[in-house]
Length: 260
Ligand code: 5FU
Image 1 (cartoon, rainbow, N blue to C red):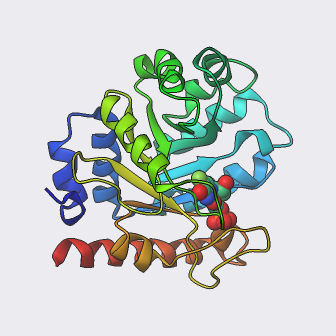
Image 2 (image 1 turned 135 degrees about the horizontal axis):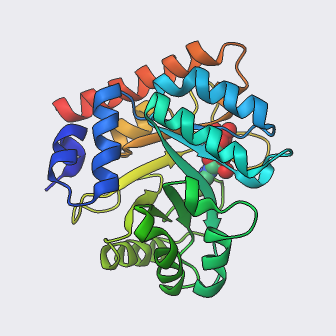
């Protein structure tokens, strides 16, 4: 079955995975497939942007280790905004170590990511132990994991064999892995969530190897479910109208895809 032609609502109704159900339901309800990548560095800026842009997004993606004035209470304020505006929090931690180490990195330290981010991600380079380690912390909390199967950066070292093996690992771990960070939809075998970074309407690269597609290409051609947009929105002079522009572009591409 080609899941990319089904609506988010249909996929919400069919999936056995509670997190996927929650995400697709709120996307259908809010009519948005936009994830805001909020890569600003102070608590005040993040909370102000999250409050303003919350109505237009389905997921808010953080890089918690770039925040200069992080305190744990920040995460509680962010959770309150996630409830107020009905979005999920995704810490883009890109874990990449052995199972025993990622357990501590995910559940402990000063960030305690597993307590406030219902979504996180990891590289599969270390093998299945990384998924087992993260599952041992996150599954009982109702969290889910995305596997990095492809990246947006130019000349990256992800081979098609690596991507294939990553898909196989996802299929073997569907109780905790619910999707991918990728540039394309990767399989029809199961209903995974595909989140795609590297999305911009006005440029196709930055000076450090980032490459961009439009929402039309990411969602309409490549089959992404969620577009991840950062600087194009938070560096704009008017982030609210810019977020609305990306939300509409992402939603139109999805509507066309599902009506074909
Ligand atoms: F896995 C990936 C990837 O392949 N490309 C990315 O750009 C993650 N990212 C993240 O998405 C990156 O770390 C940024 O947080 C965000 C893209 O930000 P931009 O400002 O839209 O380029």
